[in-house]
Length: 73
Image 1 (cartoon, rainbow, N blue to C red):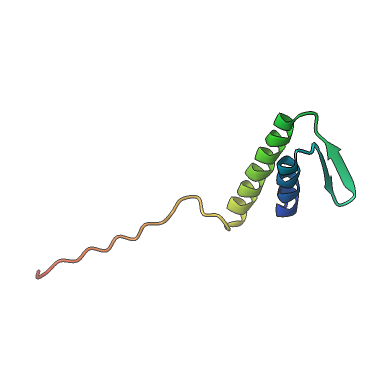
Image 2 (image 1 turned 90 degrees about the horizontal axis):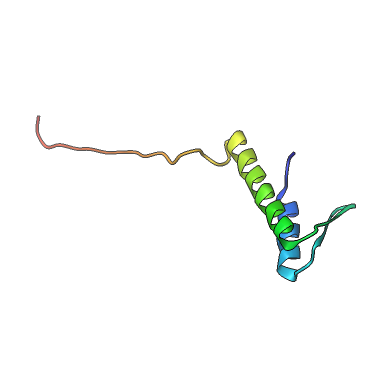
């Protein structure tokens, strides 16, 4: 499933307010516990990072450029 930053923000806002009910547009989800809400946040973050890696927006590993010089032959 494709997650959005708006969904992540709504989940984090609900957690910060101590609420267990989250609305995304016309849908509403009520979580049974705070731990379940935290698990949903982790899942959305993981999904967003996977989407970014798949589209090339988040590189897999940093690139290194090494420059060496020497004097003479």
